[in-house]
Length: 349
Image 1: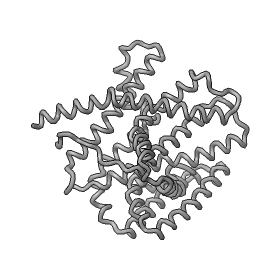
Image 2: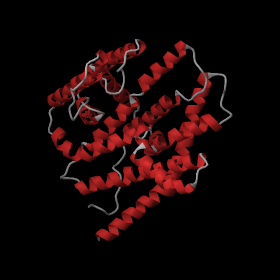
Image 3: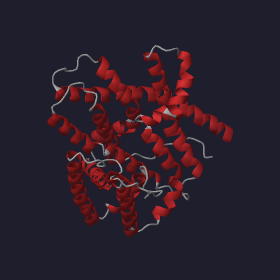
Image 4: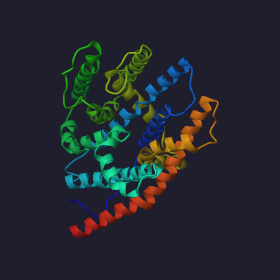
């Protein structure tokens, strides 16, 4: 195993902007059911249309993860180094934050602290997979296979990438829409079930949009797909999010928009974006707990106006999660990571 002093790869402001914007999109979606002020029927539909639009953050995060993971090159990085980094920078923080949340739940419920270990074990291996942590359980499986898939997709031509994504979308169409018309869908492939296609699509999309003509076609297809998913939503037709091929194409548009919006070059703005992107994972871990905390205990929030309360909750949840995330990362997680790295380096020497 490759030990020694490990450093994260150099972060690019544009991609960190996507991370920071993506976690804000997630927070907005998750807060939508926690505002506590009823809306009119039209207001509720407008809110859900917004959530349907912003929920593309899930796909974007899978695409971002795949885009970087599938760059693995065994001639430049060892397998041991790859898996060691995933353990140190993803699994370790994940387990620590799960421990913090498990402990917080026990304390809030006024249960005995002695129940924390068993409760934590149950959460890690069962219950948390049904909460917002589901994303990480699916992502980890994709990351474990990424070094082997990388060699395949690095050798694909643009035409090959298009064909692969097209096949994936066809399978997803069958998976999503056959059950809607009362037919059992048996059309499952290793790359189309769950979120695997998005993970792989990130690498392919990053290569495809380097060609301006191709990028233009993807943007047009994305706009059309957004119109379709909104039509499906307002028609109360199931299957307008997640694995829907229309949602997949729209998510490509959302990725391109976020990538194009931010222009790096301003030193101070880049520093802010890099900072927010760096702690986006920590904000992700904490935001669900903070939504509950803010909705229950922040009595200064507006109580009559839905929009005002919604916006205040978004700001409060994001800021509190960021402050706590920076504190926990620097006070707890980084010392543990350094300790693990030092221990394994000492053993490996």
